[in-house]
Image 1 (tube, rainbow, N blue to C red):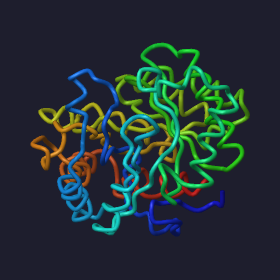
Image 2 (cartoon, rainbow, N blue to C red):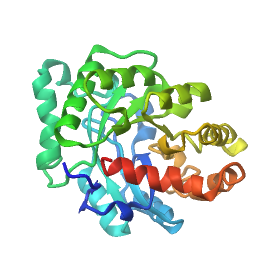
Image 3 (cartoon, rainbow, N blue to C red):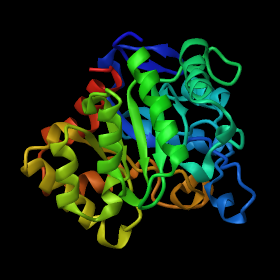
Length: 305
C-alpha cells in the first residue's frame, strides 16, 4: 500500500484531508437481535448525509468510518455520502470485539482470517472496488478474548503486508496497554496504531502511559456530557498536550447512535466538535494545538507515515 490516504473515492493527497474525525459511524447496523442495538442502527442515507453536511459547513473535510465486517458496514452508502457532500470518507476493514464478530470467525483458520482482510485491501470491500484506508481490531471490557488475539494477529499481518494503519476499539478505554504489547510482539511499530475510546477510562495518567509506549490515542467520546461542556475531556486533552504528547492525540465523537445525531432526533451532532467543544478547548489550548490533533496528526497517520 502506498503512503497516501485511501478514501472511498480513491487516493487523495495528505493535504486534502484537512480537519478529520478519526472514528465515526455513518451508516451502521449491529448484526445482533438484541433490541438495545436499534439505537445504534444508522440506516437513513438522507439523515446521515445531512449530518455530514453540517460537519462540512463548519470546515470539516474528512470522516473515518470505523464500521468493520459484520457490524452493518455499508460501503455503497459511504460512497454516496462522499459523492453528495464532497467530504472525504475513509472506510475500514477488520474485526470488532468478540460480541460483534461474524458467526464463522471461530471456525476459520488464522490464515483465512488474514486472507479475508487482505482481499478487502487488495480487491475491494463487499462487492465494490472501494478499498479500506484503515483496519480495525477490538477487545472486550477488561480482558482480551482468545478470538480477539487471533483478530489482532490477522490485523497485524495485513498491516505488515500492506502498510495500512490500524485503529482499535478499547472497550471503555480498557486493555490499551495489552493491545500495544500484542501489536509490538507481532512486529508492528506502535506509531501505526491508534487506540480508540481512551478518554472513557477517565484516567489521564493511563493515557500518558499509553503515549509513552509510542502509540497514538483517541479522545472520541465527547458529546456525552453536555451539561459540563465535556469539561473532563477538555482537561484531558490540555493535560496531554502540556505533557508533550500532542503529536499522539486524535479527536472524534464516535457518534454511531441515534441519540447523538440531530438528523435522527438526538444531540449534539457532527458539528459539535468544531463549534461548542472547540470553543471550550480554545480556553485551554491554542489554535495550533487544535490543528495538531484534528489536522496534522490524522494527515500523518492515515498517510501511513
